[in-house]
Length: 54
Image (cartoon, rainbow, N blue to C red; front, side):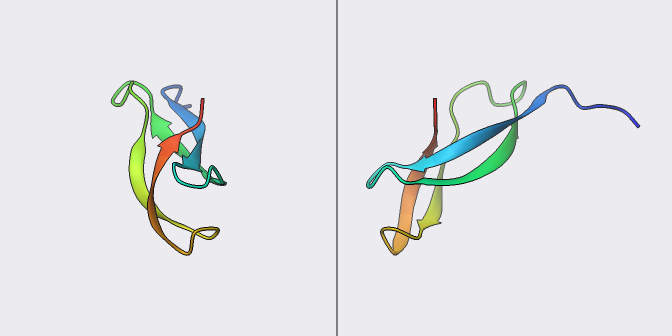
């Protein structure tokens, strides 16, 4: 099997409360900038914008 070296794991953090939500993988070749998506935050109890943690 081929090993995919372009994928790495990142942690997503809520922009409102700062809670670390989940780990996900992204292709660093296709998306070199930081990931920013809307996900459900368990701490805020609503959908918030989450950004990639440093």
